[in-house]
Image (cartoon, rainbow, N blue to C red; front, side):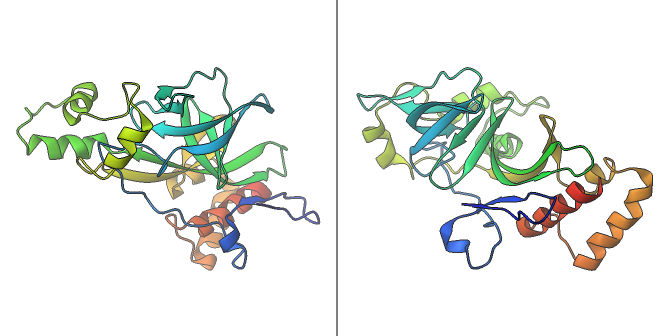
Length: 243
């Protein structure tokens, strides 16, 4: 659902689920539990609208495989196949909007229009596999240690499913089998196509020198935390009004 404030020059769009309407805050997304037998972003393939250049390109049942990441679809015969959508910009499911940034799907949480420049600033979230942690776990299973992590070799050893045109009806029942994936969550500021980590050091570096002290006071007064989604929305609003 889209919420906007027409009386304010700062147009804030909050993408939230119906059950959170009473709070008027975006949901704090939980990191899902995934295994090597179901290395996907979503619990199951989702009906989605795919957008290219602000125009609807297609409708499909899609999921995002963590090996890549790769956008995959279910074809008419029920097989999971890699999707080929050149210049895909965003994916809209029934619950959220995902933007494609260098092929990386990130969930759009909020967006503002920067008052001074008119450009868009977006708060986004990425769920990804921490391959370094997975590598550390695998070395305890006897995999030879290597200072330079060979991710391809690691993925091969883990036997990630869903990469070889498997039947969805056969793969989905196995989704809880295999080893757990070390999933992590990261928040970013998306500006001019660049993902900037949402932490104090990175964000302060974007501000003019004379704006950093007021920004620090804003954080302190609001007791804002960099790991709370609702607080990050407030920080995004501040950047839109004061950058």
